Image (cartoon, rainbow, N blue to C red; front, side):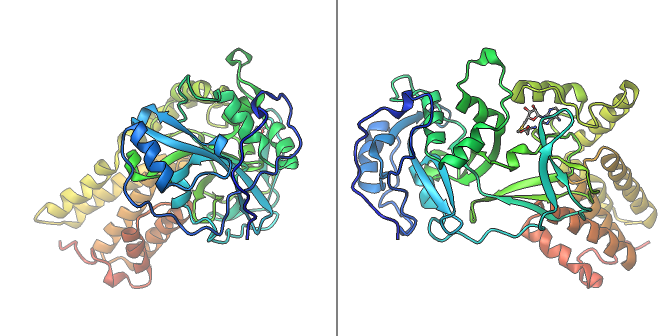
Length: 436
Ligand SMILES: C[S@@+](CC[C@H](N)C(=O)[O-])C[C@H]1O[C@@H](n2cnc3c(N)ncnc32)[C@H](O)[C@@H]1O
């Protein structure tokens, strides 16, 4: 059981310190606390919320760190608190600055065990020109779990501090970093800093901005949404470089509070493993991607796709634009039209299949064969084969769709159920729909 001391006031100002002082051992969040259920829903006005918080919200142990902050974007006042979370049987300490109500939506004290990745399948080491990166130390099959990690720090990503707030943003980030154990602090400060000098960010803020991985945490619905983007920094996962044709994808699991990384395709020994920092469908052309990466992440992308010769890039841009224009609704259209037609002929179904096969080829050649749209094409091809009662091809395409769903964290529960039909094709809803 965590030790609990009475809340106390800070008698010094840690925010003005340039270097990390001795380890600060103020009490940590008590993980054995029961989940919190507010007695009444929180009101909207700041003043009323303050009163409501006093009776409804457990305060951070360190009251001086709690303060009501206006979150402009959501038009709500919220109470952000610094708290350290202890996980991994106490071996990991995570410095967080979160809305106090987020803790009540996390399974504090009842964390799920982290998943187990392949052992020693990857290493983090210097690249030739992009600082550190992650590399495969052996051949890694598609859909393998290669990395699992707790964050070192987590903050809400829309942190709008009013000028009257007791700390500046730089001080907030400094405090966030200061609260981690010494070794973690040193590792955090040695992460890459790509912020331009003219930005004037202090080292902590610059490092946080460069190395943040966006994660989603449950959020009080009273604040406008049940989930909210947060910024997490990882000592190792933040070393994954970006590629516009990534071979790995990541996801954060709030139940175990870990980030997991899976391979999207088979990876050879020595190959660099990259994730994507941006939405590649929303930014199909090289110019759009370069501009986005420059604007958000302050680097010129030298990934394999962006370094292709100009003539090849033109063709690649065209393919990616086609992929981008094919929204999930448009992907469903040809099959739906066939289904709605009276004949439901085999010839017309072959046209639908040609449409999907072409799209699959486009996505494969662009290295984008992991997106939801790719999954949909594979899945609809399986549906077409089901309509033709072609067991072999049905199984093959449904199997491919299932692999993509598993490695890319895709597919709803409903679709997962359909993916189970692989062993019993005749039970699939579209079985034998083609009549002529
Ligand atoms: C989150 S860090 C990734 C790890 C980093 N390479 C390191 O040494 O710690 C992001 C930084 O890595 C570099 N980087 C990542 N992907 C890159 C790419 N595709 N092209 C060029 N630089 C890249 C940039 O300097 C970027 O600001």
